[in-house]
Length: 337
Image 1: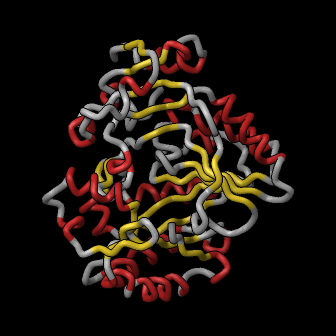
Image 2: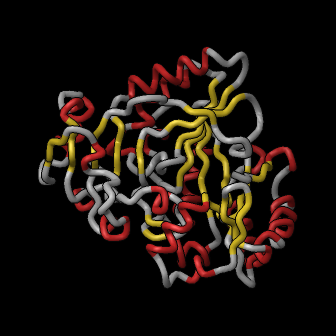
């Protein structure tokens, strides 16, 4: 049975590339949604990200597109992204996110709010195995750059497919970056020491103002509790930090709530990161939200990224000091990309 967060109302239609129409995975997904229009197409670019599309308008009734991924499946992660240790990579089995965070760079990256699910998992798996074999030591693979890793798990079965790959390759570390509480696949599987569920948080105030359709902070904490109790490594990603006059007090409250619920010593890693995004994406988002106060704040360009000006950066050391009152320095890193 589909989780109530992923029901027939999520998709306005399902488009299927002709090349993948006979995939068993595709047929299973279509059987779950018999009452939604099923439309055949040649390539997903016919439906996704055309020049005439508008992200905000399409977000009201996005479609799901089932497609085949070509080209490089696994890419090197940019320097400054993620925790240290070995070579780092990322891969994207999906484009776009079911949530609607106002600050999300994806709405500046794509004109389309449709969801693209690449269903040729076996090709991803082959690329992951080849990459791991080419690394002499540990290597880390980040999922959740172009999407939320878990939000569509009841539809995609992403974890169900890829967890065995990492179970067989313990030197490869998988990070599932998410805001989702869709953790059933994980709880039904044996925990893996090399699979880290990294949950993202902002303050309660930022959540209510800018994170739409996202599970409540308390629900995300409950999900982490269940995962820890089941033996899964968990991590915390406090980003983006968006400054306000009471930012330190807001994060003091959040840290107390989160760390009181978890086994702190068993947390894999904790990171913070300022609000930032590529300059071109920022320009596109400002056009979508000309009246959004967040994007009217003073910004500064640095190495191709737009950052909020010093009022936020000056708060970062205070937030770091707060954080060090709960965790060890070895558990912490700052995300700068």
